[in-house]
Image (cartoon, rainbow, N blue to C red; front, side, top):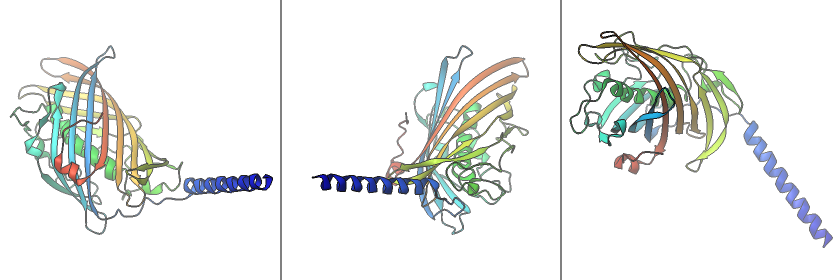
Length: 321
């Protein structure tokens, strides 16, 4: 009997030591983020929630933007992406879910080695004209601030899915993260991309990033596959926008932003499978004539999930809570 107990204890000890060594191996090994992503097509659902907060701290209105995208990479180099926007839904001021027919099955491409801008200066190859005079499925015109946030959904998508989660062609980036616990200041720190959008968001408008830090937080399992968790933090960012609220009224907005979140990256394919973002924004808008000042505080969250082709084709506007 004693011999059986001793053998059992030895067996348990070996099992513990094996599990411990396997765990240590995973935590201490080097991972490579500088490889080219596997060719293929991936499908995503992206939801952005924008909540306005009154000066007394109460949440007032909520806008929800839901986007279905197919992203294809087939050039063999990991450079040229072809994107299809299957559907875009909005729910503004909780007024009901509306589709945006003008964005149905819209296709565009971008080459991530070209400083993220095309010959027209459009970031990620996103055509500004698509967001001029947007209307919902009932023919109602989308307000200027919502049109910008619809456009910005595509900017956010590629910033998170490409700029932060792929090797940076211009300097330091995710490729510098080797082991869990590593951190790096991203090459996009203090960059100041333009945010002008057609006639309603004028030239000279910009968003200026703070010191963007990437950190290799750890490992997880998403959709049954191992995934690396990479955290990003924008630091103190700022923006300036000059908008045309109506044909006769111009406005200028100055504000500050801080956004951060996690990117879950499939270790084998290097495609993101889940992304989360939280942002807090404070701003002051001055209407030039008649002179009015508007102070705003906004809480914004973004969730991107990789989905099946079937869910992409069905494109349900059901929100993610």
